[in-house]
Amino acid sequence: MTDQPHNLPAQTQFEAPSSAPHPFMLAGTTIAPGTCETVAIAVSNTATGIPANLYVRAMHGSRPGPAIFVSAAVHGDEIIGTAVVQRLLAKLDPTTLAGTVLFMPVVNIFGFMSHSRYLPDRRDLNRSFPGSTKGSLAGQLAHKFLREVICHCALGIDIHSAAVHRYNLPQIRIEPNKPDLRELAMVFGAHAVIESPLRPGSLRDIAREAGVDMLLMEAGEALRFDELSIRSGVNGVLNVMAHLKMIKPHPEASQVVIPARSTRSMWVRAPRGGVCSLQKKSGDAVNKGDVIGRVADIFGYDPLDVRAPIDGIIIGHAVLPVVNQGDALVHIAEVMRFGDVEERVDQITEQLLSDRLLDEDELI
Image (cartoon, rainbow, N blue to C red; front, side, top):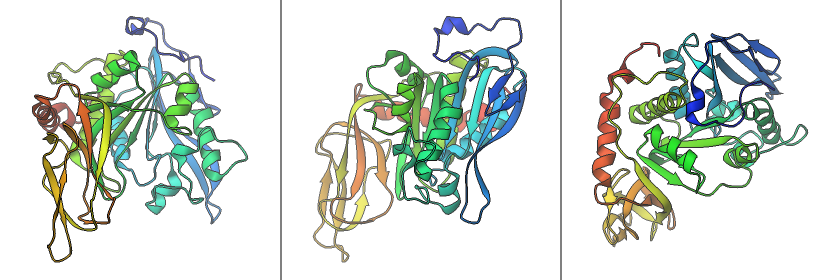
C-alpha cells in the first residue's frame, strides 16, 4: 500500500506543500517523485504460454497530491480510452505534477488482442469484481486490478464506448445522490452527466465498497477512434486534475458550458425487423411523440414510425441499419434543463473541436 490519501479531501487541502512526496510503491516497484515507470502486473499466460500482464504507466509527481487512476479497455473492444491515455501521457509532465496518476491504456489485454468485449473464458470483466486469486481468468484479472490499482487510489476515471454497432455521445455516468461526485462530473465537461445505479460486480460497484470515487466515461463506438470522443476524454481528465490541483488550469481554457444532466433514461426499440432509417442521432433533442426514425421491410414497404417516448436528448444510437424486432435504436436521457440542451451540446462540441490546447503537444 502507498502513503497516498485514500479518500479525496476537500479541494482546499490540495494546496501542495513545498516538501517533496515520498516514493510511490506499486506492485513491488518503487517510483521516485517526478518520474514515470511502466509496471507489468502479472496476471496469467496466453494459450501459447506468453505472459499476459496488466500494464500500468505510473506517473508520480514531484509534489504531494491525490492518487487517481485512468483505465481503458475494460471491455477489450472499447478502445477509445486507449487513445485518450496515449494523448494524456504525451501532455503530462511528472516534474510539475502534484500527486500520482496510474494510467492503464488496456485493462483487458485478452479481449483487446482478439477485438472482443470479453475474456477468453467468455466472461465480462466489468461483472467479475471483486474476483479472487483462484477464480476464473476474469475473476483473477479483476482481483489484481482491485488489489494492485484501485485500492491505492482516491478516484478512478474508467473510459468505455458503446457496444459494437452503436455510438455514444460523450457522457459521464456517476452514482446517484453524490453531490461531490456530481461536481467532478460537471467539471469533466462531457456533453452529458447521467446519474445511474451501480451494477453488482462492476468496477464502479467494487470501487464504492473500497471507498474510491468513480467517474465512468462513455463515448464513441467499439473498435473505432473518433476525434470528438478522444478530445472529450483528454479535456475531461485534464479538467478534473486541474480541479484537484494536480496540474495548473490552462490559461486559455474554454468557457464552461453546463452539460445536460439526467437521472432517467430509456432505450427505444425497433417495432419490427427490417431496415431502419434514423432521422435523429446522438446530441439531438427530441420531444415526446417526435418521429426518430422508421423501420421498413427489405423492399422499403410497410414502414413503421419510431417515436420518442419522452422529452430529452439522444445520448446513444445504433449505427447498423439492419435490425431485428426489439433491437435498441436510440437511447434518450430525460434532461433537467430541456429548453436549450441541444444548443449547449453543440457548444461543447464546437469548443472541443476548436480547442488549441488539444491540438498542441505542449507539456502541462
